[in-house]
Length: 409
Ligand SMILES: *Cc1c(COP(=O)(O)O)cnc(C)c1O
Image (cartoon, rainbow, N blue to C red; front, side, top):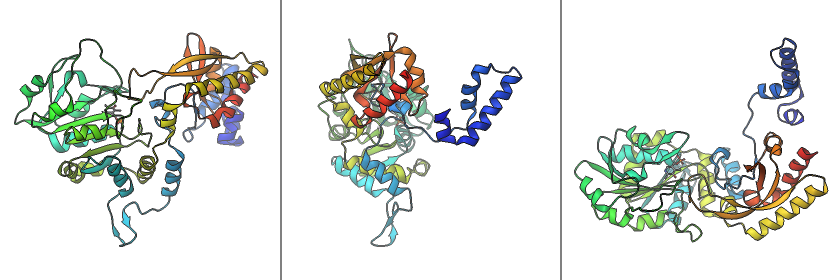
């Protein structure tokens, strides 16, 4: 109730309580349900900032990447009137979001040109519409991915009017499979990074360079937005390598491993990117000035909260976990330090396990922490709530301690 008053104000919360009490009087709800019903009846406000102690670095339900301070500052600055589409020196119209485009081009010199749309799915839709509508997209059966919430890449591609030409099998696809399918009907060959699952065992897939040798344009959906190879995630594809291998176009998301805002990134040969950029659909996928500002800042300063969480030192996480446990124990809260495993999540580096440390609490803490202020999200493992410190910035330890202490009290 106190938290709700903080968000909605006393009058509104009081009115909600009175209405819920009235429902209890007429027997619609039980008296003990009044607080929960009252809070649930309040209007949904702005999205709430939560503490991500899940150990999932890129959690789609928590908005994937958290923006770094430079990106947040850029968003605030861009919220007013900006020069997003104006050249201040000449006073003439300029290319929209050129800061972001220039930063992305500089970060991936192998690209002839760059374009930005709303998200990774939009990048694929634009590519399929502009390059393959009424024609065929040749794709391996091992790469027909469901991205989440029931949305599937094959459905998305077919919705553009392109036809899918599936080749190979779930576990093995060879260059001969592609070669047999490529012909005059081919719009492009598509390679999709299976970014949220791994197939292991008797498997085979075809590298980009070999697909390029077939002669048709190759579009590579790398998914996670790595600009260049990252030694930490050796199996994760990156834009620079795909382009150097001869890809005509690379698509990716801005809010995965790049650590930026939701955006769809497209790098490629000049004539291919220009075709996409001038296609009528491009206007419907046009990206907002706030996104462009955050994207430019993120690419220029890639040490983002995502970057930090991925590289957090397990020894330091343990020291923080011990400190948190000791403070909680001193206050009579049953807390333990446990080692655990964090994951990248959010469509990147499936199968990669990041050793981490957590404070373990009774499972009953999960709900009150989740509905508290600020909401704290952990994960429940075998009857215990783990608060994994990997994605919690050290500066938030105090807030985390206070939230747990409140629930314990
Ligand atoms: C995440 C992902 C997408 C979808 O990107 P959004 O930015 O979520 O629209 C498409 N393809 C791959 C391989 C992905 O990992």
